[in-house]
Amino acid sequence: MSFKLEGWGTFPKVGTGYATDVDGKWCSFLETKKGAYRGDHTHPYDQYTVLLGGSAMVVKEIDGKIIEYPLTENEVHLTPKGVAHILVPLEDAILYEWWQGPFEAEACPGVFDEYTKNRYGPSD
Image (cartoon, rainbow, N blue to C red):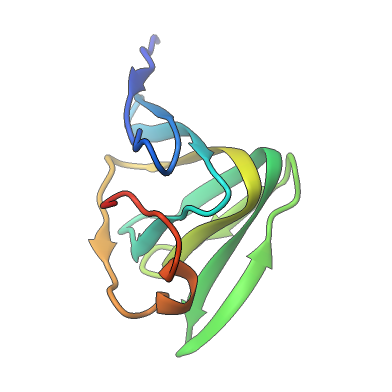
């Protein structure tokens, strides 16, 4: 088994990212700057996220309700497949994420407008 980290998910106003495929699992290391966001989408796979440093929360839409989940450093946070979510750093943050399968995402415009307003995202 081997892998090679490659630049992925790097956006000047959002942060630096690296990713690789390990036996069919998508794995990424992401820096996300305070004042930015990542996500605002769904995945067809369960997503696992670990906060390695800094401070951030994952915000999800579940049954039409918006729920904030503060991340705890070194603990695995699960976002089930199909759940709309967005990552919002409270200060600069470093995360590790993985899921079974390639990177696939479907945007969910309008769901997290409160969290994207006045923040930088991947399209900025």
